[in-house]
Image (cartoon, rainbow, N blue to C red):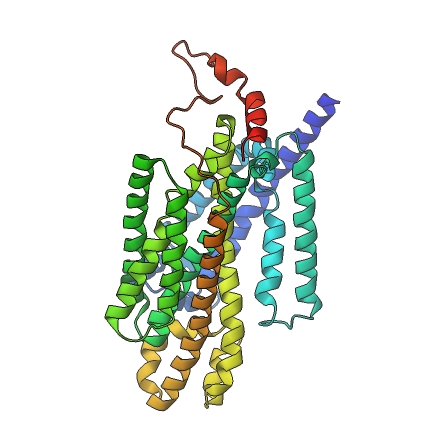
Length: 432
C-alpha cells in the first residue's frame, strides 16, 4: 500500500513539474506581449526609471512586429530558469503540502465568509444568492473545520488551549484588540485624505502619532509586567484608555492639535495589549503548550486584522450610502456610492479646489458621519473587551521555563520535558 502511495506521489510530482515547465514560460511570454510590450502599458508605470528600463527591454518597430533587445531575453530566460528551479523543488513542496494545508486549515472558509460580507449591500443586495451562497458555504466549512480539529491527531488549533478560562479570554481579547487596531489604522488615513484633503503620503505622516503612542505604551507595558508580574490590570487600563480614545475621535475636525492628541491617546490604549496579551494567555496553560499557544495567538491576531478591515468597511459603506443623498450633485453621488468613497478620498486633494465650497462641505459631512459611526463601534468593542478582562484570573507569570523543546548539556531532552505533554494536559484541567 505504501509503495502505491509513493508511486502516486511520484506521478503527481512529475505532472506538476511538467506543468510548470510547459505552461509557465509561454504564459510569461503571453503576459509580456500583452502587458509590457505594448505601448499602452507604459501609462501604467509611474516611475520614470522603471519606464526607461522597460523601454530598454522591448522596443516597438511597427504595429505588427516587435523587436526585443537583449534585456528582454535576459529577463525572460531568468524567469524560465526560476520556473525550472521551482519545478525541481516541487518534491519539497509536495512533501510539506499536507502540513501546510493542515496549518492554514479553514482559511478558505474564512475567505468565503468575508467575500459574502464584502459584496453584500455593495455589489449585490443581501438577499442575492451571490451573497447568501458564500456566507452559507463559509459558515458550514468553518464548522466542519472545527469538527475536523476535534478528531485530528495533530490539530493546528488545539482545543485544549481554549479549555482554560483565562487563556480563552486572552484569545478573545487578542481578536478584539486586533479588530480595533486595524480599523483605526485603515480609516484614520481616509479621514486625513477625505476630510482634510491631504495626500496619501501626508496622511501617513499625520498617522504617526497613533503608531508612536502604540510603540511607547507597548514598551512601558512590557516593563511594568516584567517588574510586577501582573497583566490583568494592564489589560483593563488598555481597553479603558482605548475606549476613551475612540470616543475622542468622534470629535475630530481640522484642528491639528485635536487629531494629534486624540491619536496619541488611542495609541497609548491599544499599545498596552501588544506586549501583554500573549504572556497572559500562556500563564493559564502548561509549559508544553508554549509553542502551540504562540502560534495560535499569531493566527488569532491576524484573523482579527482581517475582520477589523471587513467589519469597519461594512459599517462605513452602509452608513455612507445611507447619507449619500445629502450630496446635492448627482454626478458626485455616482462617484461616491457602492464602495467608491475610498478611491475618491485618495483624489480629494486634487478635487477639492474644483468643487464649489458648499458642495464640498456636503461631501465632507457624509465622510464625517460615516467615520464617526466607526469610532462609535470601536468604542463599543473596547467597552465590551474591558468587561471581558474581569473574567481573567491573575495567574502569576513563570520565572523559569522547562518545555519539551529544551535540551540539557548532553544534548538530550531533560527528564521533566519528556513527559511534559502528558503532565501539561493534567495541569491544564486543574487551572482556570
